[in-house]
Image 1 (cartoon, one colour):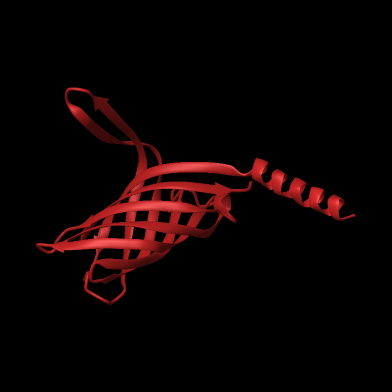
Image 2: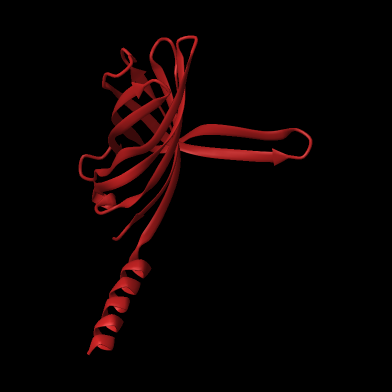
Length: 169
């Protein structure tokens, strides 16, 4: 009886692994962060368009990357971030497909790690986020998002993200 239960559990695990879908994305979000102060939550919205990213590696010229806006809907990053010295904590949502009222696909995330450097009024940082779920296409999603960002003295934020997300259809 015990071996039948173990086999059944293994089959259930195998079925869930086989039916999982992986999505990778790389996007550049841009927006405004107001009053980027220390130890207080700052909310910001940043938008990303559909993008075509081409990275070229040349033995003579080195590495070059070109980001071009593609045809498609936008993504909206809504987040709260708290800067604490050389670290930060962040959580929020990313909504994909803003041009469609009928289909909304949302990722929810929270930071695992965040490090930043304050220099001449600018803030540069990098972090790793844990995907904690979602809606639409991303219901039950899990995975990780990595981010690199720059906030300039006017509060303009450029946030480059790369993500590997898994979900069950």
